[in-house]
Image (cartoon, rainbow, N blue to C red; front, side):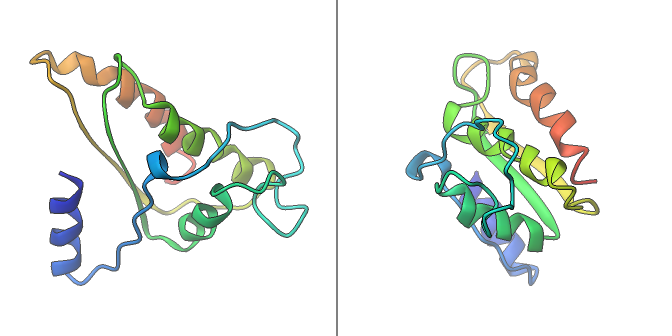
Length: 127
């Protein structure tokens, strides 16, 4: 689904930067509140420092993930949690479109609530 979305976006002339959180090293937020004070988004030098500039530059942010045990996979959850850095450092990342691409193997659409609800509130920072 992610690849189909990317190809369609590129076909319409959009530039897409893809980050696969499952293949990256992004630690959870340590709540040290030193965001952007070391010249990097996060004082703990992990791959979020590669993702953060792309989020700042983007017109849209799309989170793509499967439902794992009725919630967000831990790898992408660490990325979502680190959106706090922008808020804490008072860096305005508003004005962006935000979307979720997700799937699960159950027919009950409410299974997706484990992804939709936790992403809705952080997505308001992007709007």
